[in-house]
Length: 305
Length: 96
Image 1: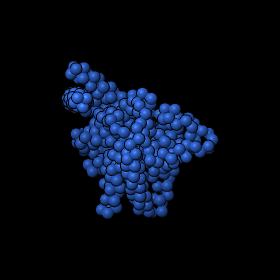
Image 2: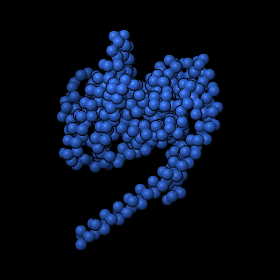
Image 3: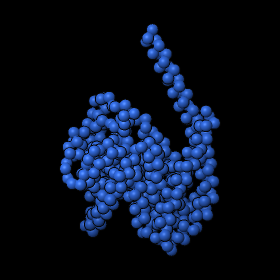
Image 4: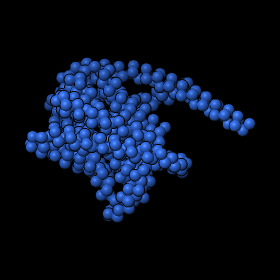
């Protein structure tokens, strides 16, 4: 099939399958899946700038589907998502500026590659340790009728409690997430760091935001997944708009990819209901490692996937 | 005796779960087949007609194109989700 905007010939079946796989991952883990979608589009000959912009457009559609599904399960904290969107957009802008600075210095590829490998490996290592420790404790959860379905164990809980006790005005309550009071600045900082990595390393940076929401803000995993996706709709829409203005979005490719993602995202979102929080976090571990493997491959081979 | 009774109950529950899982899987496969057919029709009709118009818009009016791109994406997401939900409801309703 010929896509006139990007001038690329790509099989629509391939696009639907890629969308379907990313949809499942996104719905289940609350990630955009750009670390797979970008290389998957590049492999079939799409220019890198189109791969990034088109992927962002497809992420918007996929996240809308997953959020609607998660919202039906009560897994979206709208207040938290809206506050975080402010921090994410600011962080994404700074991240993009940092990239420009490194470009001028002439070492952007090396620095971004090393930082991304360090970040991906650290997240995976930490999550293996934490989720296995949480699963080993096996404390009984309160019954679902008492609101226990949205709570989960975390071996990092003591640090989260300390962060929640920080009295840094203004404090806000997140009743949907079961957080009585937390400093607005902590939420903005978490969102800012997520946005910074999004602008610096590309994609939605859900691989950083979802774990930080669980471990730093103390949001239950199911809610972190749903709220992260809601926040991704806002940040990815912003990214799509800016990329489209620069001529980096082939919306026809994104629409075709999304037909697969629409059904995948629903399957992913429904699947979260059958897994406990620590199990979802443990299953999340390979995702940042895949990202690290892709970066290592590009460093060794000199090719951009 | 109590032990045998519990084991019997467990067997009934696991049989029910297996039947329910098989029904869900069958409904899902039927849904997937119908959905694939709809998607193929969608490719040939909608994208064929939209392609030229979007290409022109992208070349001449970038800001409008950017807005239309996001609206199209969200619109498609909502429509497709409703289609899959309706399909699943219809198929499950018939299966039960």
